[in-house]
Structures are given as C-alpha cells and as structure tokens.
Amino acid sequence: MRLEVIATCMDDALTAEANGADRLELITAITEGGLTPGIGLVQQVAKSVSIPAFVMVRPHSRSFCYSKYDILTMAAEIKQFAASGAAGIVIGALTPEGTIDERALETLLPLTDGLQVTFHRAFDELKDQIEGYRTLCKYPQITRVLTSAGPGPAPEAIPAMRKLVEESRGKTVSILAGSGLKPEGITSFIHQTGVTEVHFGSAVRYDKDALSPIDPAALRALAESIHSNG
Image (tube, rainbow, N blue to C red; front, top):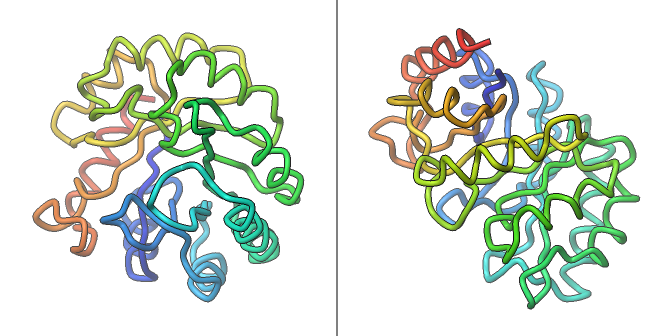
C-alpha cells in the first residue's frame, strides 16, 4: 500500500515525510482543487525530502479544456520541473466532448524527460472512464490515474472503483484512489476496491480544514493503518 499526501508548502512536505507519507502531491490553491506551485517551492521540496514529490501542472481552475496558450504554459512548467529534482508531475486535459485530450498529451508528455506522470481527477469528468483508462495506457509516461471513480467522493463509488482496479491489473497504469477518503473506514474501502494506492488531503489536516496544517498524529495513525494492509 502507498499513501500519497497533498503538500502546499515546505512545512506540509516535511510533516508528511516524517509521519508516514510515501509520496507527495505538491500543489498550490488547494481550495480550487490544486494548481501549479512555484518553481522555488518545487526545488526546495525536491532537495529537502527523500520521498517522491509529484508536482501539479494545472494553469487554472476554470475547466480541464485547455487553449493552445494554456498548453504552452504547461509545457514551460514541465520543462522546469523535469530539471528540478521532482519525481513526477500531475496533469490532465479533456476535450469539450468529455474525452481524453490526446493532442495535449502528445505535446506535453515528450517533455517529461523521465518524470513519472499521474493523470489527475479530470479523469472523473470523462463520459466513459474505462475507455479513457485504455486511452491513457497508450502512453508509457503515464504511471497512474488519480480518481474517485466518478463525479462524487470515492467512498460513494466502490463498485466503479473496483471495476477500474480490475481493468488495471497487469497494465502499466495503476489506480490511485482519492477525493473524500477518510481515515475512518479506509481499511474497508481498500478491501472492497482492491486499490493499492490512496490519496489524502483535508482529512489529515487539523479540523479537516484544507487551509490548516497537516496534523502529525492523524497522519501517523492513518499511515500505520494503511501500511498494515500490505
């Protein structure tokens, strides 16, 4: 089992590493679902923590449909992050018709220079997630999909999550479950869905407030619970 935790600053990154996180998703604008952080923070995190840091590349929160200028912005950021010491990036792009924007991927993925790539929760706005998953499997740079298996919280989509996990068996793109997960009931969720990676944000912060710091005790207890599952 792997536990990914959202970090929005150096304190988050250090607290997450010290209390059992296996990987960071580094973002800014957490209340908007996460936007691209500055290169200074990315460089500081990359040289200060030993667990992998995956950097959000999302230029705005209006939608997941991007103009050519958005794509150029994302391309410039990916080039910087590839040289920063980060382990990966987190991206996603859709067409207005609700399918994977392969033209965007074909522009951006060649710039990743060995970085792993997570396709983020834009995936949850697809009309057909299984078809979308199969599309993503065509791209060797993409190693995982962050998903709640639908438009709502992950705990409300257990059958759909299990179906995605079954689809992913033997393939190169793993399923990272996130959105709405809570420490309470996480063991049952893991057993029911078969996921091997989970993603937490607000649920491990003081008062479960997105703008509060990570609660070390809450994260440590969660990490121990998750890692005991294998």
